[in-house]
Length: 387
Picture 1 (cartoon, rainbow, N blue to C red):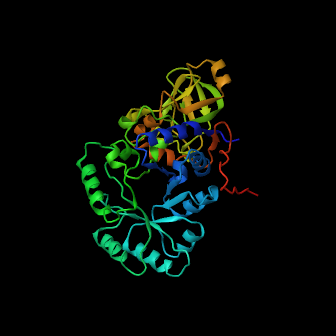
Picture 2 (picture 1 turned 90 degrees about the vertical axis):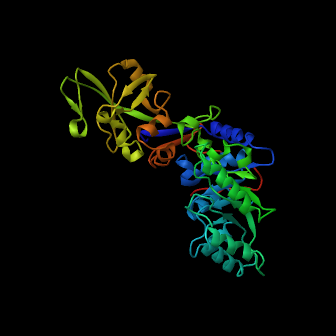
Picture 3 (picture 1 turned 60 degrees about the horizontal axis):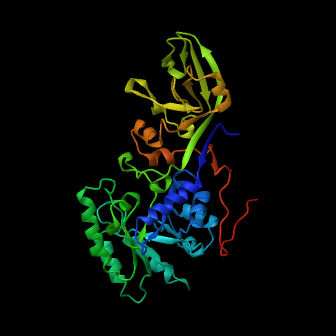
């Protein structure tokens, strides 16, 4: 059994999905960003829970993620958008698995157009217009090439026009309205095509930003990039625990861990926990010289770290935790009410996205108390069994 585990509450996940949908008008659909293994929580179980709650549009980053998701959800009504678009020689996979490429450049536009002329059932695509992020998306020349191609003998079938907000987590930033107006102007060339602009933070900017489809990601999992903007109606989706492997006493003057950075100033009771930086519990969480010492929760008691985070282990000072509590608990909470996900991110000088996507593969993931996700609901689903 792994010494560290995530307890993932799929009911909270789907409650967040429904809540985010309620923020939009009835004409707006709510998709889901499940890239990076559903932000570290598990692509299959998370996506199936969202599908069972009505989600029919999913967004991933890479083709490999799209292929993995299609293995989990075979329903062809479910659209899987691949945000980075088709790379060289990938088009047959998009067709075979009914994945929707998101076109970001004139080169990708040409790639899909050429491929579609060789097959009986041409692929439709989403089009990403760059309105100010300057990262991915069609620039002015690429957009002109796209609109010109619509009048050719082999016009491209566009099922979605999208863009991405750069500063949505700063509601007052002027770029939000600039991008909104630019998106309205450019997407008007596709009058009857669905449009999408808002990610999690964009949803909170108001319905003017929602268009036909929103694409929540981090908010599905109960948080936001800026802790100050976390909606109180969003529910935390996961907790993180590590087993107590050993409890020991050390005397005044004895040290703990690599570098002997912790020195006991009195007889001290220590608990060694089975988690470390190989699992995503960062070394930066013990920086006493910088005022950062993370705490873990044991039976409601806060226990500060004592010594460096190592690859597989951390040590906490549990001098004030009764032995009976330690024995009954058997584990420590790494993310808890006294040290939330947002607190962990701030302590590491980063954002919740990085914490979540850095959760290691050897952590056991439990879903609503089980080590597997929910079965899919619906007649059109064919489930694959693992040998």
